[in-house]
Amino acid sequence: MKKEEQGPSASADNETAAASAGPGAPAAALGGPGGPVPEAKQKTGLAMLALILGVFMAILDTSIVNVAIPKMMNVFGVNQSQIEWIVTAYSLVSGALVPATGFLGDRFGYKRIYIIALVIFTVGSGLCGMAWSNDSMIMFRIIQALGGGAMMPISMAMIFRLFPAEKRGMAMGLFGIAIMFAPATGPTLSGYIVEYLDWRLIFTLNVPIGIVDFFIASAALKEFKSPVQRSFDIWGFILSSGGLACLLYGVGMVAEKGWSDTEVLTFIGIASAALIAFVILELSISEPLLDLSLLKNGMFTLTLVISSLTTVIMMGMLFLIPIFLQNIAGLSAVQTGLILLPQAIASGIMMPIAGALYDKFGARALAIIGLLITSYGLYLTSKLTMDTSFSTIIFWLTLRAVGMGLMMMPLQTAGMSTVPMVKMGQGTALSNTIRQVSGAFGIAWLSLLFSTRKDFHAAGLADQMSMFNTTVVENMNRIQAQFAGMGQSTAQAKASALAFLSGQVQIHATIIALDDVFYVTAGVSLLAAVVSLFIKSNKRSGEPGGQVHVMGE
Image (cartoon, rainbow, N blue to C red; front, side, top):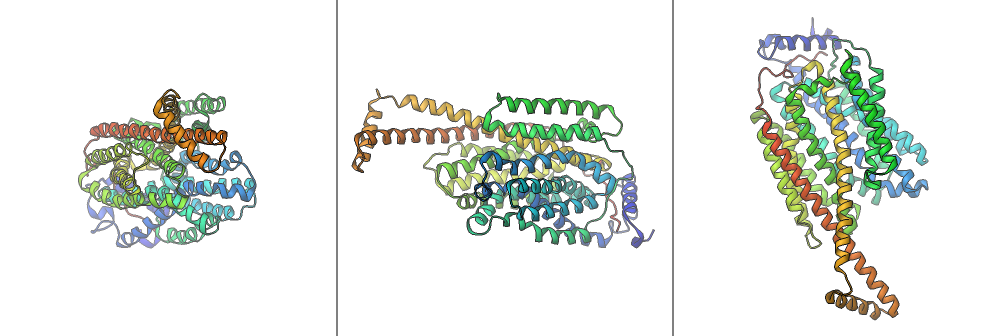
């Protein structure tokens, strides 16, 4: 067939032919004497740019809204519990949609679904920028999430089809810039926009970028579509989407209400029942929504476990570090973002470097070294005090980011490279589903750990403030005298001194609790490094997912 006559079905045929030919097939069978056709090679860079732009916007919008919450509360005249649904709705809808992305890509074509998702996300972003009330903003965020939730797994599946096995490390390293850089830069960008510009720009900025990305994706992306048509597992979708939504919502309330709260237990109970029924259903039907048999693949499952542990670390740190910088150190949102920015730059630089190293050395060494660096960086952060300089904090966070950037994408690439190409869509959907749940659990677990340790240390420090302690009495009298010297009466000065000491107890309890959490996460990172010892050396030939194929026009 002539190249100009090839369409989506021809692309699928080429992929199937390449798969059957195998990695050792002659070059002519894979697109001619030079391998993949030159025109396809020329467009690969633009294709990567299209995917990175879309995913960057989608991930950015999970964190960029948080800083603007107080401003939106004033504009819409609502309270904290009402405004939180602007954030919650996005995470619930995007998380619930992920399991269906593999089927949608296989059935309708990955390029088509990506472009549709991009258009929905861009339209949703524009509508969010025009929202006139809290209810309208929630509705428009749901529209935005319908597009944003699909872009990540669809993009990953396309990358594994665009690149042969020996080039996937570098490709996933470049793709990882969006995954690591977006959540870290969100608070910085949002803080600047809210403080100096119009808060609605955090949404409307996506519109011109989305339009540009639409034309790039339309021109550069190639269509990939499974030659095997599957029926849609409607009950699997209902159980998985409902179960995941309830699970993410229930776990999201843990930090505020604790694990024993009735509402938390109710949602987690419903989620558990739905997800158990989902697993039973998927294992008993011939065309499941998610192919759970992929978990029998030892390498795939092992890398998922390690990636889940590192996601817990990453999401927990992104949530807890601003607590110290804003609540204790008293920095503004913009200042906090500027301190967090170097770690984002470091992880962004490390991603393509790690990708190139993966192509040469494989995942095991990078995972172990990266996790050990991460563990050491977290251990140093557990020495945090009120006297720690900001430059030292930046160094600690940057060191952790270097470790995370070194191992995150190689781990995902190593696991996904063992998935057969025909199941790549389901593999990325399953991987992203588990990662999203891990992130939610990470924030909930570390937030609850922080809260528990803070109460524990506050009680211990309060016990030390006994009036029978001469040092405490002397300090109390000195502080009371200072307030009295400011013109307060004796009773007022005493009350002010007690309030000051109580505040100091809470500040020190908060810092010690944060140190405890950082110490625990250092241990989790060390555990992940030990587990990484079981990663097998990467093979550059014979990988199930390593076929090279022609991309049809």
